[in-house]
Structure formats: C-alpha cells, structure tokens
Amino acid sequence: MTKSDHTAKKQTDIVIIGGGHAGLITAALIGQLDLNCILIDRDDPQKTLDAAFDGRTTAISYGSQKVLQETGAWDALEPHACPIEKIDILDGNSRKNILEFDNKEVGGDIFGWILENRQIRLALYKRLEDCDNVTIIAPSTVTACDTTNDHAAVTLDDGTQITAKLLIGADGRGSFVRRNAGIESRQWSYNQHAIVCTVVHEHPHDNIAVEHFRNEGPFAILPMTDDEDGHHRSSIVWTEDSKKRQTNSFDYDDETFNYALQSRFPDRYGTVKQIGKRFSFPLSLNHAYHYTSQRTALVADAAHGIHPIAGQGLNLGIRDIAALYGLLAQACDTQTDIGSDAQLQRYEQARRLDNTAMAGTTDILNKLFSNDSKVLGFARKAGMHIIAKTPPAKRFFMKQAMGSAGILPALIKDTQ
Image (cartoon, rainbow, N blue to C red; front, side, top):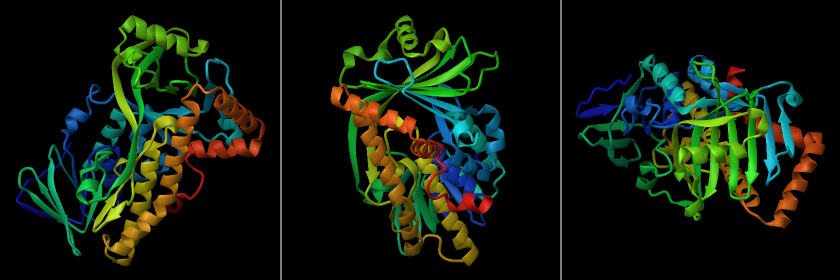
C-alpha cells in the first residue's frame, strides 16, 4: 500500500505533509501531472484503514465529486457512496420540517454523497499505488522544515532529508507546517463537542439527510449505504454544549444512549440503535491569516478549520486543492517555477474570499441556531419560512449545499 525508500537524501518537486483526506487527494491530483511528489504522514496507513481509527463519515458535495473523479478514485468510491436527494431542516423542539430542499427543484442533480472516511482513504491509497511519480513515507514524523528562495527542505525523524520546489501543508488544524512557517491564525473554541456514531434503523432513509437545529447545537442524520446484511444505516453528528459535562450523552450507557437517539429521530425511521464505537470531537474555528509563505502552501484544515454545521469542511478544503492543482498544471504547461512567490500569491488570492465567507457563515449559523433566545428563535423561523416561500432564494441555498455555486475550480472547468 505504501511506497517508501528511506535514504539519507531525496530530491523531488513537491513534498506534502499530512496523509489525511486533504493530503491524499492532493497527492492523487499531482499524480496526474508531470511532477514528482513525496507524501509524509505520521500514521501507519494500515492503522488509518481500521474501522476503530475513525468512525466518521464525510459529506461530499456535487462539486467535490468532480474533483474526486479527476483523481481517478471515484469509480472505487461510488458503490459505497450514498446519494443525498433531499434535506429536511427542523428547528427547536418541533418534529415538523421548517424547510425542505428537494433535488427535483434543481433539475434532479444530487446534493452530494455520504461516504465513510475509511472508504475514502482506501480508494485514494489504491489510486496512489498506480501513480509512479508519488511516493508515500509513513509512518514518519517531520522534525524540521526550512525554506530558501530556491527550495524547501524537510527533515524526518530517521534523519532523511528531502528537498523540493514546493512544500504543501495538509496536516490539519494543529499544522506543524503552519506553525513552523510562523503563520498565525485567529481561533476560538465553540465550547461544543460533536458525538459521531453509526446507527441502524428499521425503515430506509430514502436518501434524506436531516439537520435539526436544537438549542444545544445541531443534530444531523446523514444517510449511508446499507451494510452487507441489508441493515439500513445512517451516521449522526450530535452537537452538545461542552460546559454541561453532567449531561454529556457521550458517557451514557447503551440503553440510555439509544433511548436519547430514538427521541431525536423522526418517527419514519422506526426503531433506531447505535452500532460500533462512539467518537467525540471538540469544535472550534481556526483560520490562518495567510495561506502561503516562502515555498509553502497550506490547504484544507491547515489553512481553515470551521464549524461542521453546514457539512462543508472537507468540501472547502477540496476547493483549495483544486485551485492549487489548476495553478500547478498551468506552471507545468508554461515551465514556470511551481513554488515561486507569484504562484503562491495567485493561490492565496483565489481562495481567501471563499474560505473567509464560509468561516463567517458557519460561525454566524452556529450562534444563530445554537441558543435558546426566543427573539433569535422567532427570527430564524421567519427567515426559513421566507426562504421556503421564495423560489430564487431557495434555489440559491440548494446550489450552495451542492457546492456547485460560485467560481468552479479550474480543473472542473477543464474536464467538462
């Protein structure tokens, strides 16, 4: 699965630090270019493919699917991808929809797909095995990064030194690359955590996703493919107030947890039961003041980690990756320096507005919906009723949910 050849010194075109979704997608796209790339990750790939490593699912938007298609991994992913054809939105203690997004209203296009994180990693690893110009070194830890006008130099924990024209930080919210480059970020905690697990339910979900805005935080039900035995499955993202530890449902026994789940699910699902392991993740915002430094570019969570309320975290990162890939492809065609200051400035300019807008939107949405203010409650209900009754506004928000609104990445334009 991994390709590694530890020697004292290596030279390549691009070094990617971080082997999560962002790093793997970046490497798979670079694999389509006439460039050599080394990807470094601290985790053993076999470990990351274990179901106990990460029980989360990811919402892949319509636009992100086009990027995954470009990597060559989508054919392997499609059988495991559950399409979202409708989104039901509820508010407060009501069990009635306050707003519905139906894909029939946007020409029948799928809003997106829900995929298990493990399946995404597996498909990308398999795709990278066919990329002769991509080398994976894992597990391995980066101990130092240095840059000059000419190159970036990376040192690994075994003493290996790698030089490249461009260093890409895809190493998450706590990014070593970002900190090492001296790039500061604005950040704060939402004092919330998300409980994630998979459930089985008696009746099919009919490819419907549910977003229920509750006072303590959103409760999302995301449709998954049936398991091998035909059991109907969904993934939940249950947001709670971290300051109320005495009511933390993560610590409930199984019977109490299932009872609480049942009370939050619409009746149409029938009996609901958790399967597998529960995971809990703290929620925060982290947005870098700059996405680039000398010979260095940040992508995805290394540049911006946002609240999951809109399910757009990875999709936003994929738009980073697509923009960077488009610039790298142009540099290859014109034989220009892939890590020049001018090249990196173009990348930052291409991504700053979109990322800032989404970070601000998710921050506002969380503050608007995760509270028990009667005034705000009335305002948001009124707002959603207006959207429901105004077709152009409704279509706009549906396009945003699909991730196909606004400026499409260059690579998507080129493949259409």
